Image 1 (cartoon, rainbow, N blue to C red):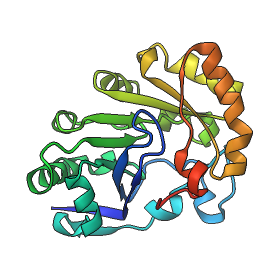
Image 2: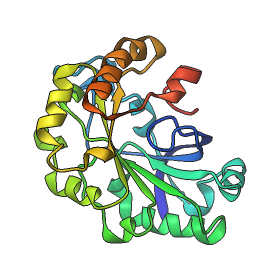
Image 3: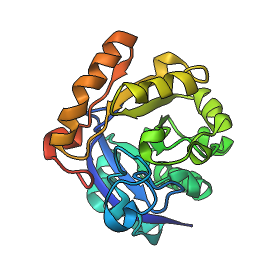
Image 4: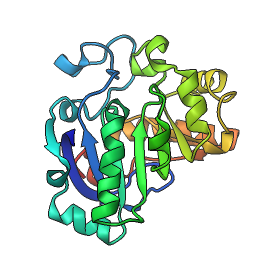
Length: 241
């Protein structure tokens, strides 16, 4: 069994419920969306009225099929044995969910049966029951208009409803009040409010600083949870840390 893998590294989780937890990241290749608008993958500019772009495009667009035994380097294996979370991210990892099921089993059987598994997803693909039975936590980040993507591509009611049945943190990337109104009108009737996290957009410290106060004030007013981007705050890097 193989997975298309873009990068693997040991760090700490930078967003959401498990912020600050030691974690091994397995970033898979491929995605069914192009946040930043069509064309951003070529010129790194914003298109289609996007206000931010996916900060891992240049990584997940380059992947290599690897057998399970070749995916994790020694430092990551040791981290998992010592209790680090396994975070499978992308791109959009659920494009490979059949093989992910087998990879999780492989990790549990060979390195740590009690390994805590997180999967990061854009919420457009319905998760398989077998996958749901193995994942401890889904980090679901549905995309808004500010991603430059059409709602026809980003809004899957059935997927969101299924994620809501499990231990899922729904993380929405906001730049302004209009983004919050979109979340409020399209998603809050589908998911439990206590599962909602708001995160400021920003692929570097300067851009993050511009939006995080706005998002923090929305969280205070609406009694919602705020998450920053710890890897940006600490290292000012988008990936690999």
